[in-house]
Picture 1 (cartoon, rainbow, N blue to C red):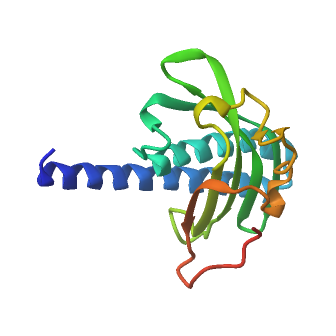
Picture 2: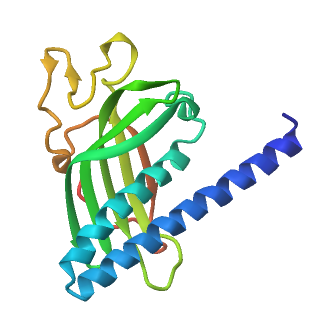
Length: 186
């Protein structure tokens, strides 16, 4: 790839990533409108759509990272979801389920955490912190099938509560608010 082609490719990638970020912010605005209207059914309907937007955004953030090999993997769903809706802010943790595009059979899960803030005056997010995967899970022969985490002593509960930041996150993506980093739970 020539340097000119590389610049074009990187520009297109950034544009696609911004598009996914705007889609996420749009979905969150819809969810917050339902909260403001006190429409719990609409909130429950929006949450899976927000999750779907989150993992599509994560796919763009992971991009061509050789350690993730995004071209050969896909996200399926999120399980064990715990979320909080705060004023202009969505915080979620759970297990993100993924599989290999070459083999529709087995699937795996990795811990996921996101803290996303939006501002009504911006089309994209105001800030985000997105964490995915563990440094000691999902590589080589020690990968553990769907729903379990590996540790040196076998299945581990050490990251059962990502809210407390016990995982050694493999991937972390951050966008700080325009006025600097905000206090976020670890």
